[in-house]
Every structure is written in structure tokens, then in C-alpha cells.
Length: 111
Image 1 (cartoon, rainbow, N blue to C red):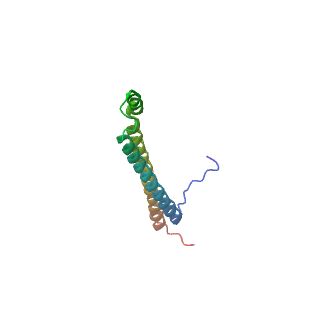
Image 2 (image 1 turned 135 degrees about the horizontal axis):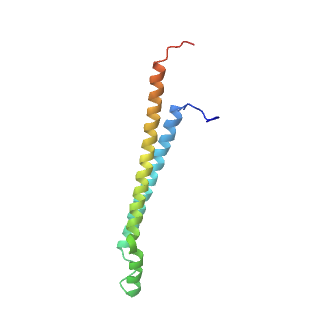
């Protein structure tokens, strides 16, 4: 392909800063998901809809198809995926830097 670089330059300090920020954001996302799920569960456990016919109808609609449990499960999966992506990027950066170092060690040209 024309115009597409054939090499990759990973600037280690920039990658390290970006991954540190990724980790901080990920931990924030995880905390919000965990706290939100716990709050939803506490509020649902209080059964604020009551035990009359209208409350029973609300409860049935609210919990239909997994209701809040599905929300908590999906939130946890999103957090896992975001954490896994950061780990994959960290591995890719390390592998790229390691390859660069190995290739540089095999270079014998003096400038």
C-alpha cells in the first residue's frame, strides 16, 4: 500500500503514561459499576413498590427477563473487557519494544 508506513515506533514513556491513565479510568469504571449495582440491589431489596396489586405488577415488570441482575452482569462484563483490552495493549507495547531491542542488538552498522 502506498503512503502507509511499514514500521511502528512506540515511544515507551508515552505508552506508559497512556496505560497508567487507562488503568485509572478502568478502576473508576469498575468502582462506579460495582457501587451502582450494589445500590440498585439495596434499593430493590427494600421493595419500595409495596405488596399490593400495583406493586406486584411493577415488581413483575421490573424483574422481567432478569431486570437489574442483567444490568449488573453486563456492567461487570464491560469492566472485564476494558481491563482485558488494557492488558492486551500493555503486552503489545512490551512485545514491540522487545522486538526493537532485539533487532537493535543485532545491528552492526556504525554511523
